[in-house]
Image (cartoon, rainbow, N blue to C red; front, side, top):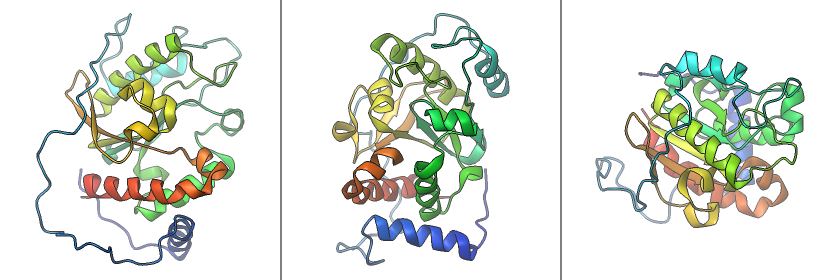
Amino acid sequence: MERVEDAFSPAAAESALGWWAEAGVDTLVDEAPRDWLRPKSREAPTAAPVAAETPEETLPGQLDLFQAWLASSDRLAFAAPAAPRVCPSGDPASGLMILADMPTGEDCTAGTLISGEAGRLFDRMLAAIGRDRDSVYLAALSCIRSPSGQLNSESMKSCAALARHHIGLAEPKAVLLFGDSCAKALLGLSVPQARGRWHEIATHAGPVKALATIAPRQLLDSPRLKAMAWADLQMLIEEVKE
């Protein structure tokens, strides 16, 4: 899909500059020279793909039908009549899919993933790479929050199978995984083990490149990690740029 980037509005530019400052960026020139005209490497990723698991039930084979299934199925982990669901948002054709683990309580109230103060930081991160919520596809491993706010091994396994199916339907150029739960579910590694290099997620539509990084809420708790997150975003920019 071709995209023509609009010029930054003053508000978007201010947001991007705010994120760069928080991440410790103080120069637009790298210490080491970079060959911007060099073709992308076609070498295999450093990590082997994680094998896909077949969901226990037949899942819808079209993205819009799968989204409707997520919004209504009682077969999802943590499904209950009163349990709020925060469903995917944004543009599935954008080329960039971002996965969180599950909605927070604040997200359930707001009806959107990564809301509140973490959401404002997330918006600045997106602005810094020339994106916004309308030009990414944002989803969660589980669109329903668990009572404990965490995924156990069994729920992680079932949510990972659904996420692989979801990724295969969206067919993004790359997937950005926020936090340990996403990284462990889809890569078998924690963020410290996984970040800084590309991986592949096996799907029914073929392998999809994936990058793990630190979740915005953790960045709020540990601002010193913002420089690492910015380094990950720079890797992402190179992969998904038009």
